[in-house]
Image (cartoon, rainbow, N blue to C red; front, side, top):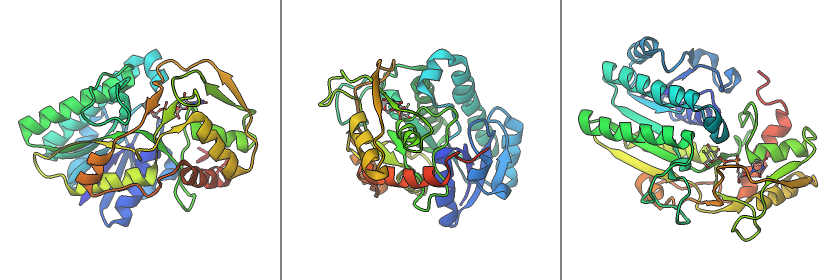
Length: 327
Ligand code: UFG
């Protein structure tokens, strides 16, 4: 199959690109490099372009006889989305509608879409099933929900097949340590902790230790990016006309901020000083996936089932690439 991967030079996208290539698919990466890294993908596969450039998208889809799209390109910082909602609506909603319309013009009707647990807002149950009400509490989550809805409408009206994959906390790096997480600025917990272990930061701020959880810190479901990639491929294989999949992707295991810091201490052998600070606005206490529907539907299961093994892979990457991709 010929697959166009938008945002394929970004963190989760680059892992799916690698797996698609290894599985024998024809792969083209479409990325404006605002967040992605040139070094994360092969140069001859990369098309530098913006989602809002519909003409270029149509040309790329047509010229390369694309059969399906994996759509990762998005702005994805919760805090930033609260401060600059316009950029999120512009990129995640307007940009995605431009992509969908380019696909429609060319007759490509299959898409795997990066959605998020942030579409659930503050869930009432843990673990969270797909039946949980989607009531996002920030613009980022809302932009992703809008596109889930658009895809359902396109499937209904135009017979498209789609998968909306709701990731929990993507983490880790490739087993060989050649690609991994590199966000500018970095806001995610595991890379921040590992930057402390590398001596690049003095300490980790623990954002609140008075949450209603056993140790008072927030609980998240960390899922390895390679496991996200295998789920994307499995979804792609099952995308027929009219197929609608809305699936949580997580391990089903929660880890608190303190537990993640402990795992990093064990893996790195570094003491990792911490300081408790204010809660970060918009952080729900607990987000853990019930991913049984994805396991069933995709005949998939995560290979990395504990935080320590995820941290081990991330640590190899951070040690070998202390400045990330260096771009
Ligand atoms: N945290 C700290 N200190 C830090 C960084 C994070 O204590 O320096 C805590 C956060 O408060 C949170 C946990 O670590 O409780 C994980 O935080 P991340 O920033 O690593 O990840 P998030 O859970 O905020 O974000 C993830 C995805 C988003 C998605 C969001 C849904 O990265 O794309 O889950 O809530 F939108």
